Length: 316
Length: 256
Ligand SMILES: Nc1ncnc2c1ncn2[C@@H]1O[C@H](COP(=O)(O)OP(=O)(O)OP(=O)(O)O)[C@@H](O)[C@H]1O
Ligand SMILES: [Mg+2]
Image (cartoon, rainbow over all chains, first blue to last red; front, side, top):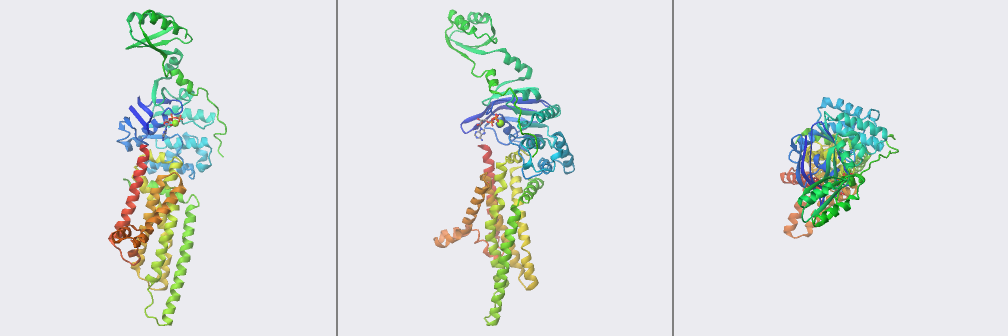
């Protein structure tokens, strides 16, 4: 349903998104997880045709997001980072406008709006001015807007930001229910957010994908331990197998002169033994370092605890 | 280009005018100034007429010269002041509220968005002009004015106001600050309006060029009841260029 290949976006000289490739199947719910500034919003803006990429391509429902922008836009519902609502409009009128923008047939607009209001529990505020609603309600109006034309693909940028815990649970249930029929990409920098709703996560950091897997696999990988790399002059086989035999070492993968060594958690003392073994076998150590961005480090930057939000969700 | 999409945008923006006091203030201000202007011109004209008859000074000025031309000429000046308020929010507010993201990720083209916004502001101007129809109606009820100059004055005024609208929409696309957009619109509209003053001081070639560029110099014919294709083409090109540049600006913002 969604196919992204080598997507790159420069803001001036800086790459906000760097060589991103991934695919999402029909009916899947995929979480885009990454710390602030990772490039989540930028990727979503490219996918929705809001802005073009500097390089690479993306296809949604078989259409290129740049060349067939209108066809792509017909198939997606987008909730941007800031809900794109008109404060001077009533909730109901706004959703009618959103439906018209997406060319929902005239006779179907009423039902479409009713559905979107029900799904987001906004029935009570239908006649209220959006400008008078609390942030949480405005966020939900933004979500209703993304749903109103019943799009095949939903792209939701931090859909539960600003909601109170009860609403967060409701919206998560809503998003989970969208899977199967709709394809959903949602972004978050909160780990439990994606684990609660998504089947698969794509972890991005500084514009690059650092991991892409199911939730279970990823958590297993985080628990796995640390990864070091050893660069040597002479990656002789006997040296490599000697390192492999050191207790506490999980895997050793050889990439040219570089050995990627994964160690068990809590056994950092094996580092001495690795270097010792390499020196003893006269491998000629050039460099020994922790992998620059280990998954663990990324996760440390992510919020792993949900903070309850006060004052949200109560209409003024 | 789908008329339905253009209309979706136009209707939304037209309604927005009436959701805040702005449209009411603009229309009320316009009616007040124009009403005063019309009755002042009318009474002045009657007095003049009376004097001509009293002192037998020959043929008195026509209704076209004495009323139509000054009233509609002044209306153009008033539009110069009011249009910045009509157009200033059209794109700047969409940018500020991030609603531009909704428009630009919907299956409608940028041209449809721009035309829709132009249409919404044009509708407001048409309504304002519609209200002023009471003046020619009054004239027909009490005297015997020529129809031609009245019709061409309306065409000319609508075209001239549309030029200001196009200019205003362009400046609104440049900034998310309404006040900045409005001020730039007023300043540049005034500039295009006044260039022909400079043309009087310039040399023969420049004088021609500047005179051609001036927005009012093209209005003169309309005021006299003449529908000149070169004037119409000038105004239509002005509108087209303004909207085209708006398209360029909004398109290039996405590339940065
Ligand atoms: N319009 C812009 N001009 C210049 N740089 C930008 C612009 N928008 C985003 N950036 C930069 O691009 C990088 C990625 O930004 P992006 O908004 O995509 O991150 P994000 O993952 O959505 O972060 P957050 O969790 O804070 O929303 C950031 O370093 C940001 O500063
Ligand atoms: Mg973001």
